[in-house]
Image 1 (spheres, rainbow, N blue to C red):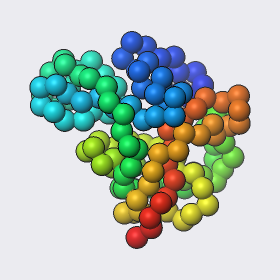
Image 2 (cartoon, rainbow, N blue to C red):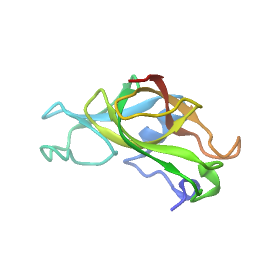
Image 3 (cartoon, rainbow, N blue to C red):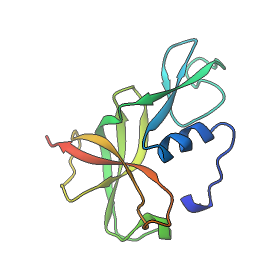
Length: 134
């Protein structure tokens, strides 16, 4: 499903509100104190239901990546582009785009950059930019 077709619900609205504000908001479990991503009603670690939102600094490490040579939707932008699994410093892993011209390597340090990949009419998305290459 293209991102422009996604409709936030009660569980994901705080995440998308954060993206609109230029922030990466994650959840933290009030029972086991672990960070949670993607947004949900129950902690995947302990099944607790006390999940609170916090703002992440948006820093992490590239765990894996691939170069897409075909766009899957208009909001994806013009290929080729890099899609990566990012291990955030809070202990969660998220799939995202790498923006910028820097080559990407496993282990690179990255930082959050909110981007509209398909132009001003496309939705804002949490992407990452390489800040320190290994």
